[in-house]
Length: 109
Image 1 (cartoon, rainbow, N blue to C red):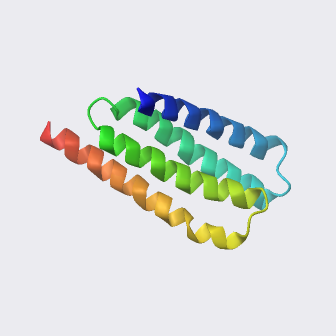
Image 2 (cartoon, one colour):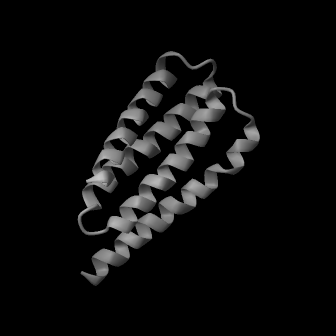
């Protein structure tokens, strides 16, 4: 249940970030960070919803990874220091782990 709520909130935030990037970003680099973060966050929110029944741990890894990945990009787009981009790969690593974990779960099923 909680994974579903978190995934829905994550998807809503992704849509908001994408819209902000398309209509109100200060510059092209900021718009690109918002688009990239929004796309990754939205795709992984939907994936988490799709797999949460059989691969709960993998769904959580996808949501946490997407949050770290996207939020660091959103923060930089809103003026946070660029060194924060060094944190973004932690989220990406969790996304890769989540996908591999899901594959493992489905392989074993």
